[in-house]
Image (tube, one colour):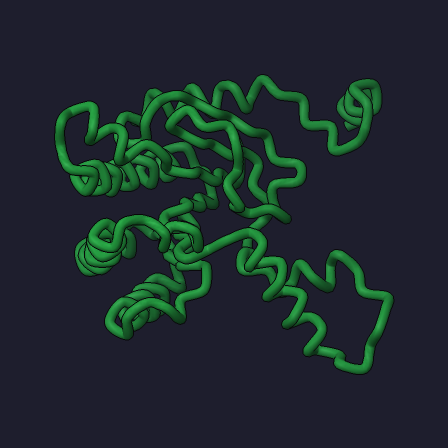
Length: 238
């Protein structure tokens, strides 16, 4: 079972369009599927779930859609945090939160504080997040720790400043909706992650679809630069 699953939840707008509904209806349905994904992770003892909710590039969408997404974010925080807390879920929101309205930032802070002691599932929502932004802000923070240092930095020095430094790197990356790219999501962290792409639109990505992704992951051989023979040798000596 993967320890950390990361998902790009793609296809809300197309799901709504297929049903002759406004795009925002797809986003509402998408929130329902977030609940199902959280429930699936809890039932399968997956420890970390990271969801790409709003990228730094999504500001380019029509203004009315962006406004609705922000309102939906507020509503979800108001309605879901109590349930997450009761179920032992710790909520974190990662990304550049400075452009968000003060009310949304306050709700995020309150939700993170309320759930901070929970350990059953670590749920991260990437909002106004971009992988390039993450690496650059980590570089800047790393350099600020020792302004006089000009060389000799290590990957470990940088990793402590990444937005997801509290979590292990994802074992399984899922993208719904048929696109096969990572769209500036967790660029550093996905180096050795197993990828799973599905044409299923996010509002249709139910528990059965989630299990198909996990089954695909469980058939992979994760070598991390080693050979199959080395892995077999490690297993036989264990």
